[in-house]
Length: 397
Ligand SMILES: Cc1ncc(COP(=O)(O)O)c(C=O)c1O
Image 1 (cartoon, rainbow, N blue to C red):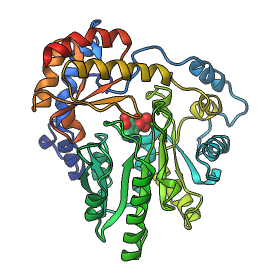
Image 2: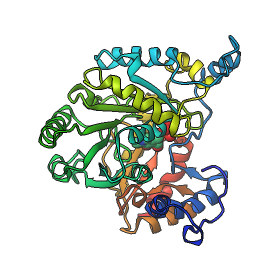
Image 3: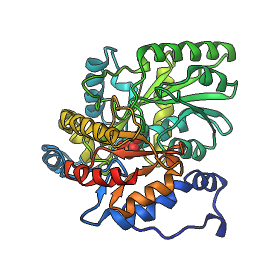
Image 4: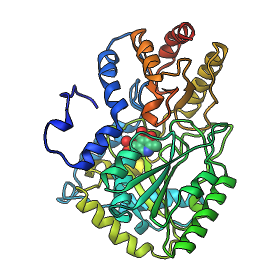
């Protein structure tokens, strides 16, 4: 996403059907990128389009990486798998944080949550299987499901509070459903699913697995689980549903998505967890060596203790939410993540976002997240950017 791309017409040469489908699924995002490219380098642009840093990296990040470049033996820069030190760090942290005893062997180190999701799909989902997820959603679930040769099945979240719609979800499950993906804290709405919802989801998946005689796996995508505001708390469905895998990325808590590290973990209560270990390992190798680099793994013990300033993020949330509401915008305060999900005053969110861009404010059209008529603001923009953008938002409504 960093350099200018040649315009690609996928009909003009032979590409796989999967990539044609992925390209079609990303039509709005691809057509938004030239606008983003055009304005994001302008010095006055208030850039809230993606979860990218707009300020310098957190203290301690570069010094941890610098220390990790120093080789301690001849294997320092050899091929890296999920290194024992990394797995022990993650399992220890998870056990303390989540109150479940995670085994380091049940942690696969990946290049971010992207890698973890790709590996979970490769290990668990066959061509033709159905994968259920909710809209609005992070824009690449659909693409990744299609790239795995599976069939995406989408279910709308509840319109009033953005909670999972369990009735709809139960209705979407068939004997071809192999995997359900949920994302909490949720991009783009900022919703954190409450324990009652997760318990209900677990009951639905347990009953469906029993009915069809094979487990339906749950992938709980949790890259924002450290970005939770003071008026909310986070719980993972792994507490209730033993066939849960968790995907995580350090790219959000450190705001360093350009240095790839994350993990895929599965619950200590999963009966087939030992078989999953080798399946995930082979999926990582065959999927193009889906392991983080040596430097990222050797710096992990230090990186694991760092975070962006969540108090400051909450201050920006409160400021932005109250100012936008005062101007007449309709939005709910997020409970976590660094996004605001706003109703577009113009039902054509793509046109509205183009208008804002011309006034120096970059936000993301809701259509890219499967929800026309909304737009997403990333709170990774600076306070100066927020101040600059408020009169533009006021005038645009
Ligand atoms: C919900 C969700 N899942 C996964 C990812 C991928 O995270 P990363 O790029 O850090 O791997 C993102 C990134 O925006 C996301 O929002």
